[in-house]
Figure 1 (cartoon, rainbow, N blue to C red):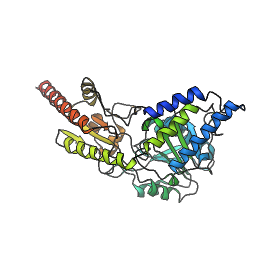
Figure 2: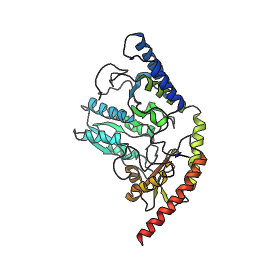
Figure 3: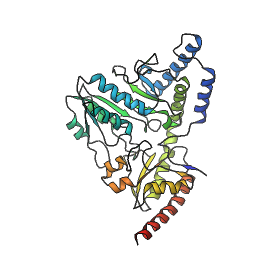
Length: 379
């Protein structure tokens, strides 16, 4: 029996989502930019999907920009704001807990003369609000803080951050909400821009959104022909857009029941993992879906492949990370060894207690075996 515990990396496509995708591919073949009736039908379907997404997230349809995923959304938000408003300033603030699709465009912008500061984190990995106040300057144009870190699961106080950011009229607040969407209910009113990807909530790969407040302008990074918005060119992928709307609707169905189930799984997992020779990196400020721990003198990649032999799948760090250690774990623990030996288990409402029991049975055996091997090598 395969045990999949890597839902924060990607999720399997929901059957209903896949059915919607196939149906639209077959029956709505027109280009939504075309003027003939096949194009009109396709555009109506996109408009209906946008209205559904807007209703679920309590935003306006006009605030939705469809992208290929969260990485494109993050790049579009960061570069789009900075290129549009660079006459106001070139100072950006972010955290050490961001996804590589945040850090990479910031590194790119630094080469163009922008200045990036990393706000301090408290002992739990949350943004130090006083340090944020200290860092914001007259020339600060963007603050980008993820809602939930993908590796440790730390949840950030978005409303409090927003209040500080919006005291400065020249400053915009962006959040990568990829690890929150479908797992938590997000108040988008406190955000100027927000990014997410459908593959994190049982949708198709290759489709995501950038939510941008209507009053804000950004410089597009993809130029071309007509699309659903002037801020991102390209033929709208009708089937992917409708499948995203379906996945989002399904993710919030029976939301309280799903959340309670994950909480029970989380509490059970934490109770058992604390009895083993590991260091738990996640804390009470983390979402229950993500549990991060570090091994004691065992390489995390070694354990990952040992579990893989038994058809159990977890991760060592975020799937898109760069380097041989977890930047997020190091930012929180300040311990390089723990950052190099960290592992992430990510749960979903599909996870069962039986799967967790089987995981611990095998994980405990592997832990003992690898620890013995390590001890014998040292003799």
